[in-house]
Each structure stands twice: as C-alpha cells, then as structure tokens.
Image 1 (spheres, rainbow, N blue to C red):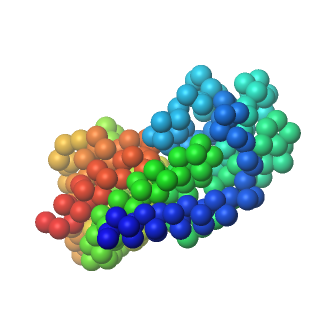
Image 2 (image 1 turned 90 degrees about the vertical axis):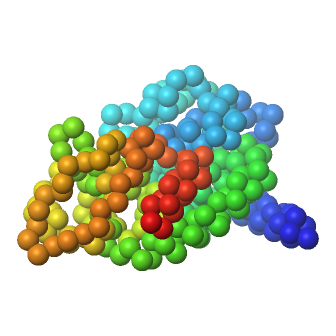
Length: 264
C-alpha cells in the first residue's frame, strides 16, 4: 500500500515538474554531450547524479573571470550543448544564449523548495534523472522534518568556525547556507556576516546568541568572554561541515549528525 502511494506521489511530482519545465531549453539527452556549469555545487551535483562525463575537462572555474562573471570566450571554446546558469548570474542569460541554450533552476517551478533541492532537481530534469532525484529527496523528508523540529528549540543560533588564526564567522560558507536554507536554522547574524570575518567579544556582544555551533577539527578553545552573556556551545565536526561544497549527497550524514547533536 505504502509503495503504491509513494509511486503515485512520485509520478504526480514528476508530471508537475515536467509541466513546469516548459520554459527551460529542451536538448535531447542523446545530444547533450557537453554541459557547462558555473558553480561548484552544480558541478558536484552532476557528479552526484552520475552525469559527470557531460562536464568539460577541468573545473567550472575555468569559465569564470576573477570577479566571478562568466568568461564567454572560454565557454564558447568548448562548444557546449547547454549552459546551466546559477541564479545570481541571471543577468548574463541573454549574453550566454548567443553561445548555447541556457537553463536555470527558476525555469523548473521549484520555488517552494530550498535552493539546493531546486538546483538538484533542475539538473536531474535536464539529464533525465528526475525519478531517482525525487526518490532521493523523498527519503530526506523525514530526517529534515526531525531536524527542523529540534532546531525550533534553539533560537538565536550563531555559526562559528575555529581556524588556525582564531574564531571567525562566515554565513556565506557551505555550512552557513545549508543551515539556513535546508535546515531553517535561526542564525542570529544572518544579515551581518555573509563574508568571512573574525569573531571577537564585540561581535558576540552585538548579536548575543543563545546557541553557538562551532565547526572545529578538535575541541576548540573557549570563545571570547562577554559580561552578562551565556550560551550553549555545540560542536560540528569540521571534516564534514567545513567542506567548501555541500550538496544533496551530503544531506543524509549532515541530518544524522545534527539530529544526534540536538537530541543530547
């Protein structure tokens, strides 16, 4: 009975996503030999989907200028059959469409989901892997709900990294983005620290967290002291949480670690 219900829901989701994909370019899978992506997460998601052979040799970074804008000459040189564009580069769509069809996550009607899932589903649709991608996220539904429920008991969270030169905050990191966008953590400084910056007593006094997640390889030294303040410190293992790229494939382990930590 459960299998039948799950199959029906998967088919309905599949039809809905395919119906929403009418705005996306349609390149037949047998003609999609070279797919250029312009972000680390998209590159890794293609590998996660078993479609890494469609990527040009080398890293996505070869197709970006130092300022992060697309390098049209480098992209054109590999003669792509399609370009997958991250949302923050949407303004480059018209220019890149002179080279090859351009696809973006926003063309696939996934707006109610987190950006990580949006990208994964978009690339799965383009490479005809949507049924398995839907099953992957269906399996994640329960653990993510459990983490959301537990995190509701931890307001005003501060994410801190322990580096060789001391503590720093960096909500624009992969861990910061996943905590906010996938796990819906209430980061107390979410508007203050998209870029990496040192953590000191003044910053702690400004944001006044109740819970501090510390990403560290080993038990870190004590945080700077702030008079009249106290917080709970929870350690996130650096071997997973400090990775520069976190994708759908990391979500089961991240969910498991975070849930165990919050339930102690």
